[in-house]
Amino acid sequence: MIEVLKQMARTMRHRGPDDEGFYVDGNLGLGHQRLSIIDLSPVGRQPMCNEDETVWIVCNGEIYNYLELRAELTEKGHIFRSQSDTEVILHLYEDEGFDCVSRLNGMFAFAIWNSRKKVLFAARDHFGIKPFYYSLKNECFVFASEIKALLQTDLVQPVVNPEGILDYLTFQFCLDEKTLFKDIFKLPPGHILILKPNGSLQLKKYWDLDFTIDTDSTEKYFEERLGELLENSIRIQLRADVPIGAHLSGGLDSSTTACLAASIRGTQIKTFCGGFEDGHQFDETPYARTVAKHIESDHYEVFPTAADFIESMPRLIYYMDEPVAGPGLFPQYFVSKLASRHVKVVLGGQGGDEIFGGYTRYLIAYLEECIKGGISGTQEAHKYVVSFESILPNLLQLQGYEPLLRHFWKDGLFEDEARRYFRLIDRRDSNQGFISEDFLAKNRGYDSFEKYCDLFRSTDCRSLINKMTRFDMKTLLPALLHVEDRTSMAVSLESRVPLLDRRIVDLVASMPPMIKYKGGRSKYIFRQVVRNIVPYKIYDRTDKMGFPVPLKEWFSGPLKDFMYDILLSKKTCERGIFRKEALSELLISKQPYGRALWGALNLEFWFRTFIDK
View (cartoon, rainbow, N blue to C red):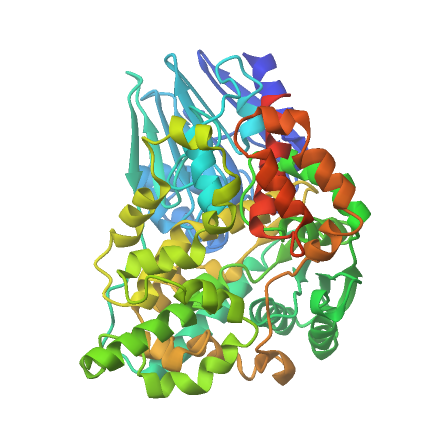
């Protein structure tokens, strides 16, 4: 068993090149690759045990409130052998059992083996910042931080999951716990897993988003409380025994994080940014420089090229295990690679769009609801977040989104909320024509739309903004965090996301929508809180568009032959997923780039990496 454990662990050596450890108890084995962040000494090595060696743990991530929990446990008589945050989980488990997870503030995926009870207990953090994959097959259970480690065993074979493929083609991520691999699953965020001696496997939810509205508190209270939590979250996430820096994208979220981090530390921090030299619309480094100058950081930049894209994409898909989300994966990796040369931990702004309502599609959906409310005369019943009159000044946010508006309104106006929002996030509309009829016919028993509706409607939220952000936090956010984790851990860099402190999320979820999303203003409450923290040039931005990549220009230029060679190859066509004629027409069209082509390219790389081997 020890050789299998070593093979699994060393497949993920990039996640932890500093140290490794293994433990075997009969037919149970644990392995760990360590990225040393807190307590760099050998006593911080994992697997780690309690005093009498009856409880063992392997953990990926960080517990930010470990000092407070450690003080509490020490008062109760627990004896610590290290300064590690992982040891805190061990002693907390001894005191509180499975409920220990509810006390943790951090990003984590861990497994605890109780050798007396012969029970394996595992947990994943509230939002899925850290990964946990598992498979239970032929009475054998295996788990790991990355799928490629599971594939090192003889227990799991790389077999395609057609339902996962359909989800990916629809959303560019998989819904629920499924993956693109048959018999390999994700432990959902906010869940624990219990494997009992008889082989039974149980999953339980320990935390969920709660949108029960607090109607007693004022807007001023919410602003003050949010400000306190932002400051505290960043303060405790600056805890580390290694150098820490910050990502700077030029947007409000990462700028807020960097500004507060610099203020709290009181010393110069290092900041990192990426852009493209293919036009100003693909280069947000000037905004990042504004923030860097404001906080006097030691600032670094990187500018990936089309040649870098060709060279890095196959390797990136290997690191990803399975493709998710959009092309931001590519530049994000290069920024992480840059940061890893200077620091071992970075803070970023991930999660702000989902928590505070930052996506333009939210405003598009609400504009329709306002028109609908104005026609039916129901606005005064506060059924809608904003009145049509109050939303007008903020419609400037939609400049440049005319194609999306035309697509959204070309049919189905005023339909059911779930169906309308699906229209804004569905990736099939542009690629439905080049999915093979045979592939669709073979899988008619599964409908991604029906599964989406189950998730979108499985709430008693009455507010549309809460329904939309809730769905995105349960689906899109874990996909984006998947990218965040893999692009950073591929270069042995720990990426922390202070906005995804569960206390912040709980607070914002409880806010009345008319405060949180006032007038349809993107991130209204967040903007109110940070208006004196970030430079005004950043606060006043209305043109932030994620991490734009010039794929349209590249696909019709330097990447043209590359795309043809991959997507129109005999190997790709023989898979029976895409229609060659439709792909060919899309590649030669005047606007060849879309998320459809991005998805097809990533899916083909995935097949070649994991299925074809």
